[in-house]
Image: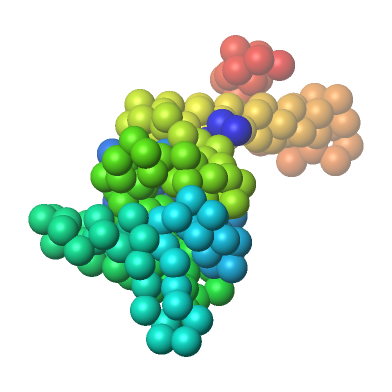
Length: 192
């Protein structure tokens, strides 16, 4: 799916995001939110997180990893993710900002052995339709939009001039007589 300026870029541009930040979000986002109940099943099936049904204590490879993580920001994000999936939430808004980039950073930090589970989680969110988006793609989407606006303005001008010429030269009975020879020449040059 190609990114669209009005749908994908402008909302973030209006919030003051840089092109690089917009590209990072677009590359990271999933097509839809990830349902927590299904994410829980994936994490349990890979042995990453188990929850004791009586004590509600959690164990597993992801819990072990969490306990020794040196990066406090990533540790906090991973802790939020685990708590959200196993109790607080119904879905992970991985299709919105800032969650898309946050989840992507947690996944990127996981060791290779946990990546299959991470990819399965992303698939629960419909995958990442704009994976690989870079800053140049954001710039290109804006350029396409700007060119379309210029072309639409040109077409509107041609239609307006054509209507004036028709009124002034083809139907002189209703003419207000305002079209000049210069306007006719401009209309011809513009593409009539």
